[in-house]
Image (cartoon, rainbow, N blue to C red; front, side, top):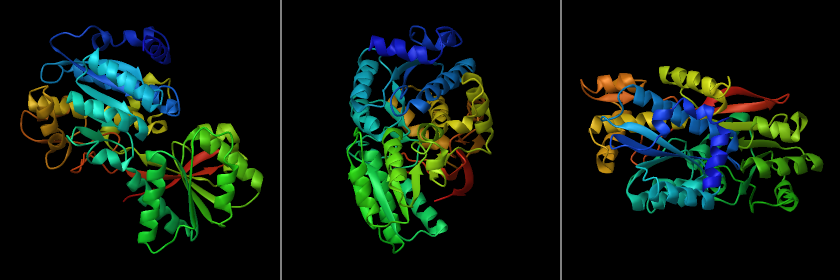
Length: 407
């Protein structure tokens, strides 16, 4: 773990990048509340993980600059899941047992979140994730109601995929899914939604990870003559699949989650291969003042990159705000007290607020409704939210957003 920690700090640029937040990273005192920034700095989630962690740090600085939450300063302990369940578990155990964190924020892939949430339950601490697997909503994963999801569920992604198929006039969809909770969850969510509209999926293939070729699985899908192929995939496997599909010469359209059909995929396989591919991802609450504040912080921390480039960083920004406002509303750092206030400060009714200082001030007069940068953050009974979805077409190597799907 010491090596991972050094590598992680390296992702912030240099040690100087940490100097800006000495109060957050220094030794815990009796007045501090220690939380984990457990994000995918390396591995499949690496395009997003560094920004996710930096936004946890930036939001914690805001909390501390405004007197902390319930009188407690936030202290952030960063670790890297390496986008791996095994590495995520090891990091979480260290965070809980050694660092004594009181909350875990920022797990990304469903496999990691499903592996870590039992540890959070056992330690009786809040966990906030950006994962899609439906299993995270219900027991046994969320048996204590301590897990909060800031990303759309895979079922919601599937419903968005189905709406896009209707809008684009597709009739014969097939699916290809990476064999894990997220990949299969995406395509199963689509299948249920599509069949609910009276349609039929002409072929469904689940493939194993870490292969050098997916040609046989791809040929099985193409043999069904689909007019569109819907995937639950990641960048590495999608790179191979798209190259092999292009080489086959068989025409088909593709609908993919945004974490696969990304600018990094364009760099890997070229614009010609991806022309017309449809990329779908949840989008941030771009018209809200909270998003403007996030975007400014993200550009400052990430060398001018826009907040739109990392929706997951907007989610981790919101995690810190929700946690801090719940603690402030509860007047306590006890887990049960925090849990009792999360939905109360995030859901209507109440005075709409968009920042921690405004929310803290408004709590003195009554109930608040915090509107986040990533979504309006109206948590349902499972601790899930429903962001809007952006539909992007890859045109000449660029992702162009064409419309928004609301479900």
